[in-house]
Amino acid sequence: MAAIRLENVQKMFGNVTVIRGMDLSIHDGEFFTFVGPSGCGKSTILNVLAGLESVSSGAVYFDDVPVTDLSPRERDVAMVFQSYALYPHMTVYDNMAFPLRMRKYERSRIEAEVTRAASMLGLAELLERKPRELSGGQRQRVALGRALVRSPKVFLMDEPLSNLDARLRLETRGELKRLHKQLGTTTVYVTHDQAEALSLSDRIAVLDRGDIRQVGTPREVYSDPANTFVAGFMGSPSMNFIAAVVRRREPLTVECNGLILSPAVKRTPEEEHVLIGVRPEDISISKRVNGEGIAVSVLLVEPAGPFHWADVAWGPAVLRGMAEAQEELAPGDWAHMAFHPDEALIFEAASGLRV
Amino acid sequence: MRKGMLYLAALVVVSYSVAPLVWQFLTSLKMDYELTRIPPLLPEAPSLAHYIAIFKGRMFLRIIANSALVASCTTILALAVGSLCSFGLAKLEIRYKALILGFVLSISMFPPIATVSPLYLVIRAMSLRDTWLALVITYTTFSLPLSIWILTSFFRELPDEIYRASRVDGCTVFQSFVRIVLPLAAPGFFATAILVFIFSWNEFLYALTFTSTEASRTIPVAIALFPGLYEIPWGEIAAASVIVTAPLVVLVLVFQRRIIEGLTGGAVKG
Image (cartoon, rainbow over all chains, first blue to last red; front, side):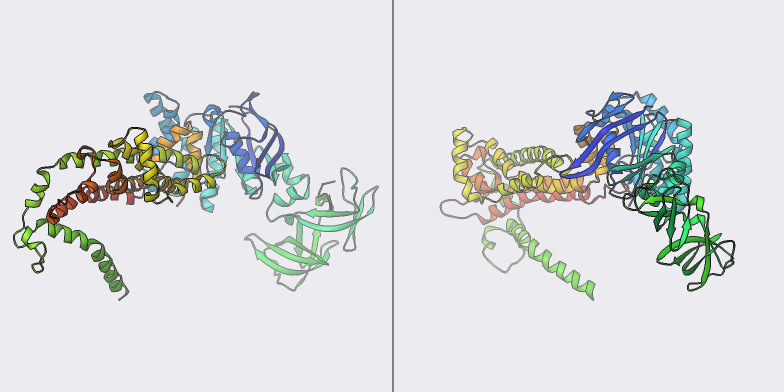
């Protein structure tokens, strides 16, 4: 187990900067997730932590010991790859024993460790099989088994669930969480799936083109996003942003589409134009008038089971909100929209920063 | 109908390429008086006389051994150097990879006839004339570009993640090469080995130039030098050709299965 610290880590491929001066601490025993759209540099960070990619500048520490120049084998990390990367010419047993053999463990100890890991993951029956004889889910487990068999300092996981079908992905997600609770090993996880990040992590770093846009607990990045990027990326469907103009600064009053709002903010926006961010689940759409509903026209209705997602037009803005399943909405209908002003977040329009 | 056409095409191609071999084989079994006559197409009384004759009066076994030794050493050397080089080009962080590969390929662009004289001078200066080492060095040089190109493309096809996994699992770069990359690229490795072996086994020009005595001659040269002053022993040439072709056929058949075997199945999600 180890705490990880990145100090001003920078990674360039040729002239392209993939990671830009990153400072970050990952606590011992933490489940830490890097989440971001593809191309944001999250896999590169994992490779840097593993020692598979060198840094262009900066330093990496495990428990305050610099490991920047150590090769992967000297770092004592284990990694689970998106494609599983099992050794196809070896049996499941040999795949799992491989990292132990490379570290010259004794035969009896290898057997004990592999058996322990195999039973933890329900692989005991499959030890003699070759990877090609396994299903996708089983291969995924073998990849996990190969990682946890030698109790490394750090687990690195590069989108380990993205090749599984939806149902298996949910199951394995739960299992990963259980394994982490049980083993308590520092785990660095990379995914593009914000739901996965929210459900698994102790803390999340949201990445955008090599920059960390926010680090925080799942609750913080979801409910208290620092900027429009984080607000828009976390949560599905993503947050609505409505353009508004500042009418008064103390106390803050903004106007959008003729509606005057006085949202609670932490500081006064420096810009004239702001964006009001409201999550779709905080907007209710209904044909019945309740309170001060705003008149909107329905553009699209997507049944989601217990409720509908409805896209509505409010003046020039298009928003997504929730409607109850029994509401009989159809495109072209007029409906009423309501949201609680306290749930609206205010961002500066140009900088994207939250106020 | 389309299948029929396909088989017909296959038949034509196979006949076209196998016919000379069959002809050579039939010739080797014919008696001298039948050699220049048709009919008969098939030998009336098949005889092994030519096969026995080629071993009489010359060191034909020695010549076969020379060929085998030269071809094997060349194959081992070319693959040892070639596979390491290709691994580096395919999987490691190296600058100017395309340039290196292009440079390597350019070596094979010189026609042998253009290089044979200067090489002869070099070989003589190193006093390697009339040794099999001269041939091994030359053949390795000229089979390396091909080996490197084939092996590089095979190594490149291996998923990077498997190589990376082995590094994280505790392999040094070399261990990873030996324990993971090489076994997985075995089909390409054997295919390359066969090509290099065949090239060295059949090579004529350098072998003719660099050797001068029977003790160091290889088979193609020996066969070419069969003709005596007054006659061309077609039967013996045919018999010798059959003998030297046989090992190649066996070699290809043996390794064919290894080449076709889908070794990479199940490595990554299929």
